[in-house]
Picture (cartoon, rainbow, N blue to C red):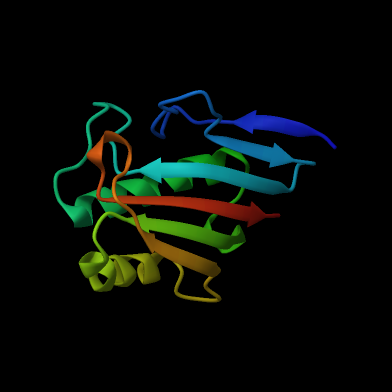
Length: 126
């Protein structure tokens, strides 16, 4: 098995001892949980909507770095700090996966790194 760390200067860097993403055998990418933090400022966006859009920009940066796109995503896991935000989050999420959406799990959690409101991890396949 051949593994390669994939990162992007256009995405938010890892905030701990883990890789932003791992590419296995050049075709399966495991993307670590991404937050709605701006890679230029290191700060979380203010609103839930802004955090979700930035989160997807950070995921996209990692996908592009592995020569993939959202169409390659087969599984996501979404973490919300408040399940009352599900409808808003779902609407924005759907705009990125309108055709053949990936399998997904969604959880409400007690807290997220940097006190974020939204986090997503993904698996993509070439």
